[in-house]
Length: 114
Length: 114
Image (cartoon, rainbow over all chains, first blue to last red; front, side, top):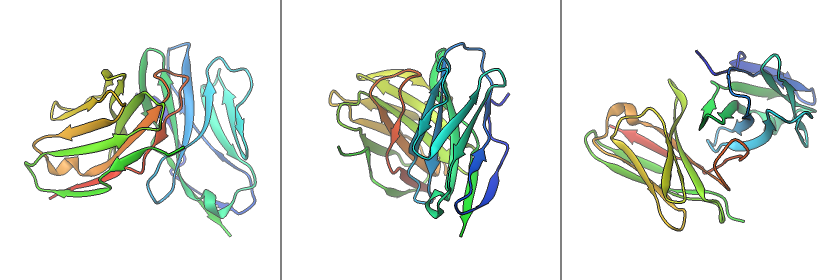
């Protein structure tokens, strides 16, 4: 079974609009971490935001926020006021306390239209 | 602070040869992880080293091996290369190992096996 599911293979969004990238996860661990990364066409993986399973507040980092709904096992990334430079692949990933390896979703290709 | 560096950036090898990839983590980071990224399989975890010890290993054949030195620099070796080993190999470093630590990635080594 897929541990990380990103249901949107690709998205087109108008510049300056907000965008939500979906991520659902599957784990039986009580402790885990959820991560979002951005991968531009250059290939380098850029860390965006982190949410711990015990964090009650949704994580925020600048224009990025993570909409964490634990009961639904959902960890959606919200980008406010999108910019052309946000065009990239976005990956959701999880690390469980029982297995420290980072498990990745298939990614969402986001294209920002001017 | 300098980021994660990987050498070489590009590599072309022939089937049956072996290859060694190098990764220098961010100063002060003691954990190094390696990932393989291909269009078909996505991102897959290879292994993680912390303080010169392998802490975690993904589902890859024994042809894939690694090590970490006392200065936290890491190398990954692939012996008897196969066409399917063509991929982007990403190295990531973090302060520690566990669910709380975000990983910072290098630019990757793009390996082509002919």
